[in-house]
Figure 1 (spheres, rainbow, N blue to C red):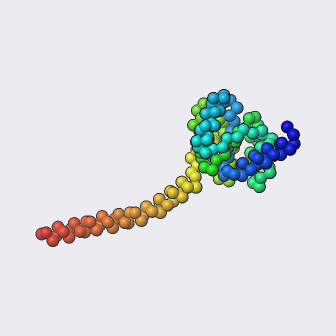
Figure 2 (figure 1 turned 180 degrees about the horizontal axis):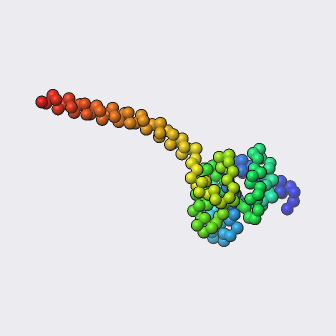
Figure 3 (figure 1 turned 45 degrees about the horizontal axis):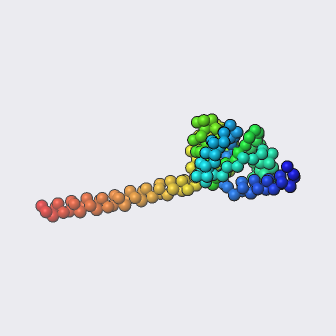
Length: 170
């Protein structure tokens, strides 16, 4: 491969990584063609971009970015595929779904400005909530006391009205 081609590929990988908030490094080397195709289809449905890359080109692309990704360098061995997403736990859920067959194997992940190295972090990554989910929970918690007060006032009004009506009939 010519040097110009390599620099173009490095720039493309770097631009793609910049375009997504989170990425996972996986090993899909033991998948056959049919399973790889099925995985790609699942990624497409889940709005996850799957790219198979050479480790040296990926490392150079990561070095060209502003963030320090040096913690990921030790896992850049063997075959590597990148799963890019804007939803923090979407790739983790997909990896977990397929991991019952042992593949794809999680090498590392960069999620919410943190590094997760090793397959033992998969369960933690599956349980990470997205920003939207966290905001929804906070809003629900804030609305809960207000709903309780309104409900108490409404039921109290009905109770008082019932008591007054009973007294007036007597």
